[in-house]
Length: 284
Image 1 (cartoon, rainbow, N blue to C red):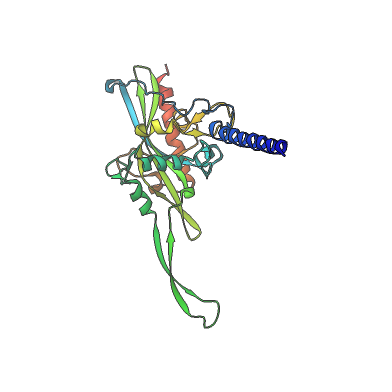
Image 2 (image 1 turned 120 degrees about the horizontal axis):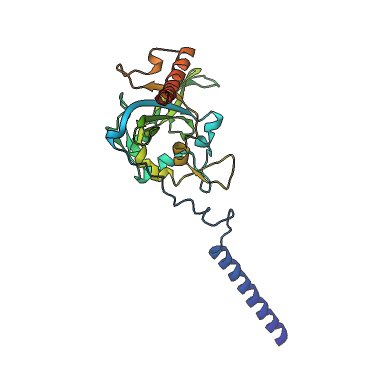
C-alpha cells in the first residue's frame, strides 16, 4: 500500500512539473513566425533624408498632381492586405492608425489642395457616416408600409485611389531633374447607380508622414527577403499613375477641358514634356 502511495505521489509531481514547464514554454518562448524574431530588424528603419537644397539652385519648377489607382496590378501592394495581419497593413490602414494615434495630421480638402484646416480622426470617420430614411413594404399581408433608417459607416476597403501632389524641379548644383512629393490624399470610390465617382477624404503632408510610412511593411512581389516600406514605394517611384492636373493660370484640372481619350492624351503630353525638358537641357 505504501509503495502504491509513493508511486501515485511521484506520478502527480511529474505531471505537475511537466505542465509547469509546458506553460512556461508557451509564455516565455512563443513561436517565431518567420526566420527572425524581429522581422529582420526592419520595423525601426528611418526614412532616407532629402538631399540638401538651396532656393538659388532651383532654376525651374513645375507642380504636378497624380492619381494612383490601387486596382491596377502594379499598385495592388497599396491596397492589400484587406485585413491586417502580422506586420502587414494596407496603405489606408497605416494612415488611419497614425491619425488615431496622433502621429500625423490630416487636413481638410480645399479647392486649392492646401494644408489649411486640420482634421481629427473622429471628424474624418464621422464625415463618412451616412443616414438614409427609406420606406419598405412588407411581403406578407396586410402588405403595409414601414419606415426604416439605414446607417452607412466608413469602409476602408472602398479607398481605392491615392492622389499625389508633387513638385518637379531642376537642381543646377547637381544638374539633375528631381521630384519631391508634398502631399498625399486617399480617395474613396462611391457608387451612384451604375457609376462610381471619387470622393477625396483628406490631405496628409508627406514629409511629416515619412517616419510612419518607413516603418510600415509592404509586400514585395519579387523577393520576400527584400523588405520594402511604403516610403520606399514613393521614394523609388514603384507605382503606376496618371496626371490629372498641372499648375496653370486657370487652376483647372484636365477633366475640366478634356474628356475621354483627349484627357488621356493630355496627361501623357504633360508627362512627356517633363522628360523632354530635361533631355533638351543636355543637347548641344
